[in-house]
Amino acid sequence: MEQPSILIIDDDPDVAEVLAAYITDLDYKTDIAESSTEGLELIIKKDYFAVFSDWKMPDIKGDEVHRRIKDLKPQLANRFVLITGAVLDDETEKELSSTGAVLLKKPFRLEHIKKTLDGFRQ
Image (cartoon, rainbow, N blue to C red):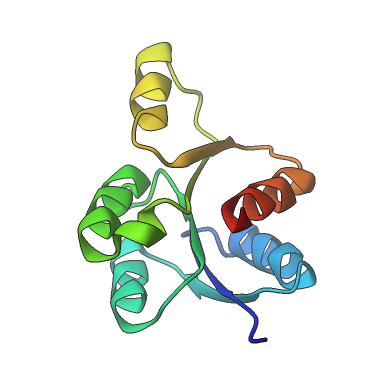
């Protein structure tokens, strides 16, 4: 059975590499996009099992990437994780949570990544 691929969209290479290393240890393949635009291009070209995207990206925010994926690949939108290190006010957190994406706040524990991926498999 071929390993499922996960796309990581993050403009911070250190965060992306740590996340990729952990996800690889969980027996997934990973691709990293350093911009949302690059991530969307990869999503069009390749089938991914899930996407982990930073929310505060310089070109297109993660919640907008999620909205676009709903049109491009609706099933993938159900396996989308927004990651943020921002301090969110209640209204913003409620808005992000209402997108249907999983919201993961930094600093997150790596077992949360495993639990999230396991949940996507069910």
